[in-house]
Length: 68
Length: 269
Image (tube, each protein chain N blue to C red):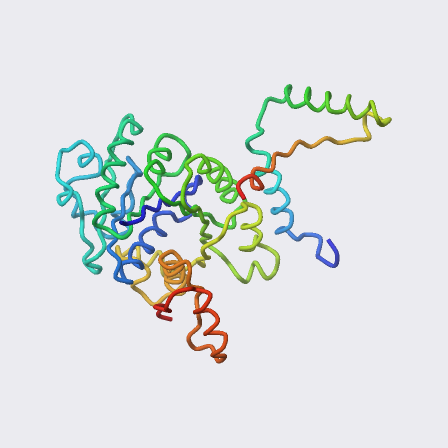
């Protein structure tokens, strides 16, 4: 956000929409998602030492890329 | 052989019916023969926007049920002799059972009309699936509202399985001033988010309310939204020709556009 005023609502909307539109088809229950994230974290922790509060896992299916 | 275009949006109130009425009228101004089908059963509105509500004798469902002949269900516009409309029914159960009949009807209409425009109901329920079932291409109508863009994304995802020839978006209620101030999603922002080409934008315009009060399309009036609609109409009818400003000073640039179009420039500025 170089030089932009902080309340640039257009960019906020864009970021929110990108996540919403991209992840829509992945909709699944809270428990499934957290289990999936836990499993991914387990795999990563085999290779790296990660503290429980020091990582973030986001699952994004790029449906628009598929369309092209 | 005509082309069938479904106008859909997911979210209600983004201007599907207004858009279809004006694109229908605009195409007929270009001497195309156009029929508009209202598939919004129960909440039909296209007849009201077109000022045809007092001429309805039969509706789309009567036609699909063979209760009337095609000629009886078609309402001709008073201003544009090439423009016709088939109104929606006021009630309908099990709409998806009619999909094959709709397909037969559309095939028949495409023999006679250059364009068959389908007004899709809001939502993504049975009515939506019915409306998109017989389309060749789709135009997803949205506005810069975050909720409308999100719903457009959802609809675009659902349209993917239809294997349509072409899918574009159209943005209503666009406000250049707000876009410049970074207070509104721009055309290219929305194209990027949705990964889909935008045919054009239409500004918010008081004249739309005024024209609909009178039951006439806004393209009949001198209005800023009328100019935007006509630009989009030319884009729909002749996508290979890049719009040329005939008043442009550089003749070389004009020449280049005609060449890129690959056709003789039959475009009227």
